[in-house]
Amino acid sequence: MVEKVLKIKETKQGTLLPILVVPKGKEFAIIGFDEWNNSLKIRLQEKPEKGKANQELVKELRNFFSAEVEIVKGKKQRQKMLLIHTGKKSVEKNLSSL
Image (cartoon, rainbow, N blue to C red; front, side, top):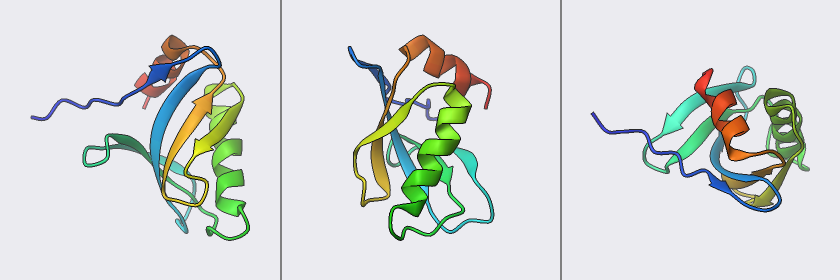
């Protein structure tokens, strides 16, 4: 079995988290780990038009992590890098509940 390795990196500003989004789903859901991209896979309900999907992503993950979230890379792509304004241990704790 392949070990799931999610490359989470702590910085001075917070924690960097790679994700892969799947827009136009039935509802928001954190699907799990995408081994091909080494990213957290997230389904979004909104279409990727006029930033609506990104807004949904930030809002939902802000609630999930109880911290500010911003997209630092990939605003117009499915693969994104998020900056979560909290420590790495806090992010790992939230993800372990999945």
